[in-house]
Image 1 (cartoon, rainbow, N blue to C red):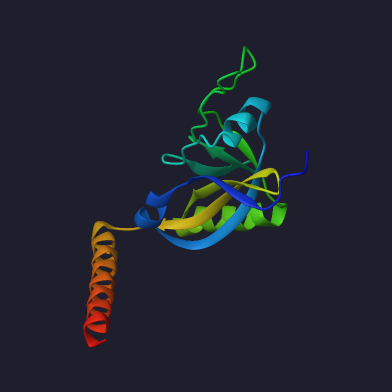
Image 2: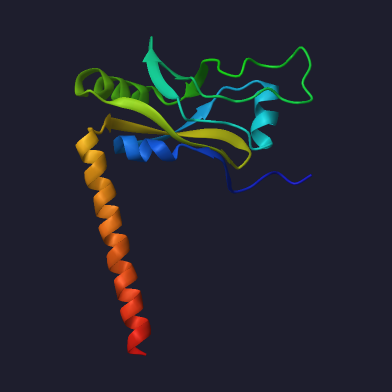
Length: 158
């Protein structure tokens, strides 16, 4: 059986880009059990309530839902357990200092397999206020309307 190559996305957190202003993105490995990997390979996971934190110089991912593996027995994992993240020490120290002093939070953006290894894309993010969300939504709508007007004008001109 050939080794898995490329990047295959399992889950994305689309709401994170709406709720937060993304400052920096970091890729981290995850420590998983066997049934968690099998469940992820089936494409089952949810990052909606997930967040990461740093404790005693180690990074952890919490509240990410990976459902139990269907064919698993007594070896199945709890769906919402705290999972350790694999990052370099310098990355952890940098993230920890920014989270501690700057009012940032660590939010998972996507969970994927990269060449057969499970990875999570973490964002150093700052929460948006309601008016910021409305402003961003309005900008997207204006851009969409402008593109629509340009395309209809292009079709009429031909």
